[in-house]
Length: 371
Image 1: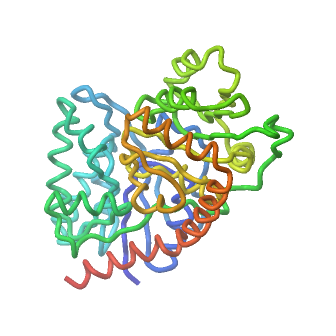
Image 2 (image 1 turned 90 degrees about the vertical axis):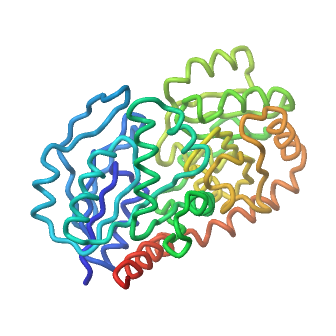
């Protein structure tokens, strides 16, 4: 069986079942750069699974105005690990450790696969930075062009990689899934939540400017009626600003950060889901919403949009409040359309399985070993 070393930035709960499935196909060893990022509040242990992993000791430092996660003993660890193929998760904060893995793979003449969600909006954000962030963008482009293969989150990433002169035959597409086992049955119903008889617009996410939640509040206020409700689930540094923007409007609710069955209760209670992002490599909350048969409104800067949003929703230009308001109005006042779109959401997302995502990695591994 092929020995594959995979380096990824964090212990993300939705990726652990994928690694478990991969370990059935290849001899997998996962290196986790850290337990979780500062903007994630989940607590999950890979010890619940049987794949081989190492949670690397690390230091968080600020270099050139940017945060880097350093692993002082990474080189020593890599010397003790034998592998046929290395897979590197593309992440700005672990770029220096990723460079170490790339150098070791080249020295051993082992192929390197890069796993990335690069999109035009997300890349523009990186390239607009000074110091280490701008340097990372240039390093990243070179890495992607020189990798033996690239595993892309989805179509938006694939198309942008081709624009960056990555050969199409080296790109393998499709990895972003949310295992339905991670979406427990709702803890309560619409009546208990106090939304019976109302049309619920839902968004879920980390409250930072790039998520565009302020735009959603403004758009909602343009078109919503007295029985419509906007629910913003999540927390983050932008939360107080958003609350101030919504002040005095009792149709806008902030339940806070929710997990498990408390979060899925809102998916089950909602009538439509909105991801108003300004730039996002994918947007897994859209996957989650589609499992609950919700129609989707998102922007053309959401990485998931070309793959997941077809006749089950609407795509609007990122940052355009009026276009977002028009889309909201179209769905708020057309219940039959919402129902049709919601059914299509469920149909589309049914093919986004862990097994499907696993096959993308396996095809990439077989490709690089055959070169």
